[in-house]
Length: 205
Image (cartoon, rainbow, N blue to C red; front, top):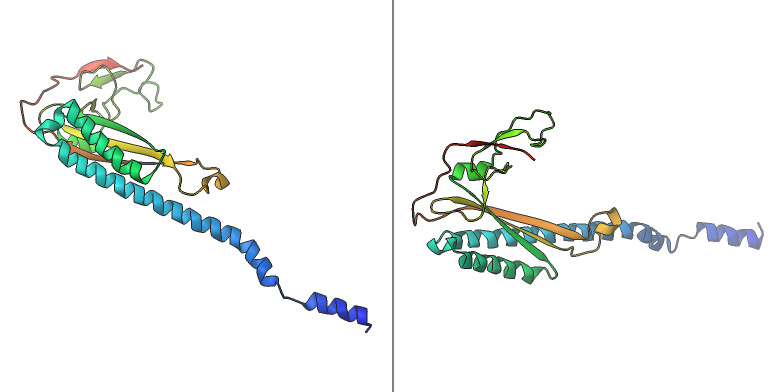
């Protein structure tokens, strides 16, 4: 065997540096997966912090003064401050839906309607049972706002923030993450509870 052939055989048999090549092939997938898990963990942490802030706000809102707009604004501001500490450039939205009793608040059952066109939606002037007399078909059966004495309120907070790591773009997901927390709270009996009276008939848009 000639010297040239021997050199070729040595080059073909030489495996030095193979580990670097293998690591280069595997590292991209490994790092992407790792950052994905870290991003998921951060989202779960945000969910936990948000739920804790909402629960504390729920306790504050059950005070007699929780019915006033000033107190509600203060509660919202407290939640906003806690979550914005953890996620810069985030947006926070709040909603309150009140019900006459806790069971209806927990179940969030839609007002009955006649699905004439069998599409599962309340539309095309279909008649519905307007239990709270607001002339609108309510998917959860509630009404907007804090309500009055003895009413039960579903307090919902939603936060949208930039993801911790820019991995979402690699798999076609949004660069923004959204988490939501809600709780049911009861207004104190500082007066007589309101009532809707007998249901009326409304028409879907």
